[in-house]
Length: 309
Image 1 (cartoon, rainbow, N blue to C red):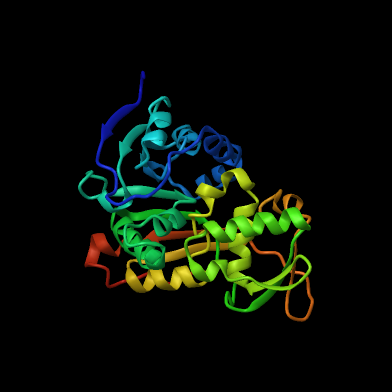
Image 2 (image 1 turned 30 degrees about the vertical axis):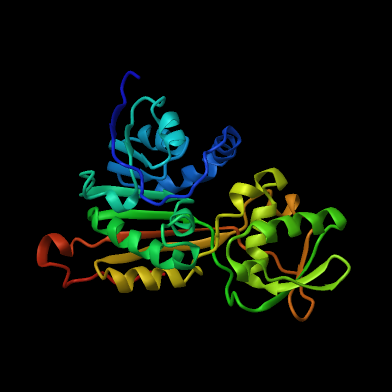
């Protein structure tokens, strides 16, 4: 490789992720244009892409003006192999928890695209401790920012009032079989808790329905991997409150959630209804943007900036 540097750390202990198939990288690459919108929040300097995967986003960041260095971090050997083939970026093998020992600090920007839910899903203590693991990682990640540095998180989003009951109607027998295969493989019991209410009709919580739809949209062949990931970890307003309570030197610049193009069409045969019969469809992605206050450099964090919704 001509212009990329490569230094290798250790992978996370206890990681249970399966090997990443080529179709995984193809699917991730297909979303690069949407991911590139995250770069609008970057301000140049040294940028870290955590969970860089196939490296398409890291390459786009490296091409931006005022960017001095892009560090692509991943703990998957398959991903690191892809990353090493990309010129112009620094490749590191390791996890978010290892930023300090990898010497990754005083960063001007940190990007996490569809990584937070993987940290939660594959943490060594198991998925039931996923939210705690995600927040513990964010505590480490936030301290790696330089003053005025930005942290950009793009990930799936928990539906509001996630415990409310919803009705899910499958496309028929094939849909029933696909939902059944998902329920057999998902490792969190409450996400498999669907009650039959009639032909091809099931009742479950909003979170369980959302997790099922996001997973079956990948197709039956991807269930062995995708059913292991619990996509929805935090509601749109919940994550900022948790992060800011944990690190008062951060402030929130932006948050929004949306339905990605293609999901409605791909799941057109599936129907979700509220208790009153109103049709419903979950938001599939959200972005949160945080900024490190300059206060760290001046007075130890006493002059915290106001939160901006």
